[in-house]
Length: 538
Image (tube, rainbow, N blue to C red):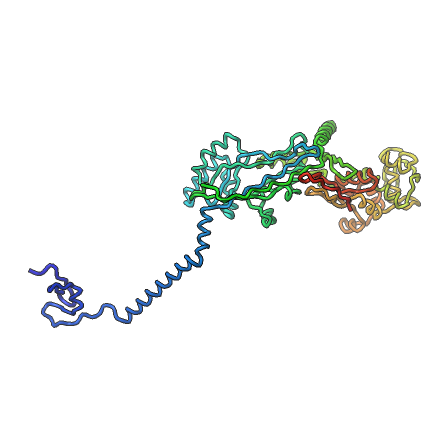
């Protein structure tokens, strides 16, 4: 019977296991069985190959040890910081935006608490299917269209740790539903914030106060060095925009420990924000509301929709009222304006978002005549007693330039010309007639600039227009025509190609009213209780 414990070998026969030796012992001794001549078993690994392999093993281990040392010693602090940042997050505390009052302390802009629903990209599920389910649920619960969420994801990827606001101004009942659901929606959170509330007793103040909205990509790129984030709100129009730096304040921060789902566990550090400046405007809210009411009555009687009113204190340039009709409600923008409402506003042919008082450019008409008279008087072209006969108009060749009154106004000096708005008088002193040489276009426009026509007044509002004073050179270049005396006649009565804003006309009127001092119109009375000085223009 053969030994069941023997090891068979094709080359060496049966390897014996006698004498208490193991099979390996037999190999090492070179013993073989089978009655054949003993032959020595060759080495399975040649010496040269052994040393090459051993050397490679040692080198590999050395490299691993060096890399471990680098990670532990050289870059240990770096990776520890990364790990810490995944555990502790620095959250921005938005500074309370500055409050705005009228000159008598009546609130014009305030902050009111509100619920907001936010999304933090870093906390969304990593699994695609799970993420999709969470996004669908968030859209259903919040009422935010899925397409809007997808658009927000694009920005959220760029700043994955910042909470992007999906919805503002959420009613209490809806907020409670979101609060219950939020823990099961990784990446989404119900939070509290403030929204701007604007005075409603004078709706046309919306053009003065403006509104805030989420910062655009272009605005962010222009102001990121000032510490703005893609999730921040910024002034979009009116005082909210022009005084953004004062109203914004300085943000604070929290160091918050979070779990793997981004849920807050504890607060490790805090720096409180500094609120924005409190502004007191020159606006008189009651006067503003009174003017708006009376203007609405007049427009209704006339069957008109568009008009503007500017009231300035001539003693210092303080704007007491600034009305532009039609208007809009700044509060509609506070919680994020409805797309349908915004579409109606921008497509309205009467342009309610357009501030006619500051941005509107119109021929000033007869309101321009006093400045032509001043230029003629101050230049010695006429005296207060110099008179011309108004017979109903002037004829120059085949052209007739009418007075507004058929038959004319008779003998007219400068006082009567201004009081009765006699066109003929201004035709003559502006462009000349018969043997009388008028001012001409250059002297008229030079005189107009003294009162602020043809350039921005400098009011602290965005989108102010320049107005326009024509010239011979401009007409030749723009229209390919030379300047005619008729052009000067039209300019002398505030018509033709001349344009001015209602604000420019008000500033010019205030300059005459105070005896000749032109002030830069201003809307800011105080900043944190400190008075703002009047600034002479020019």
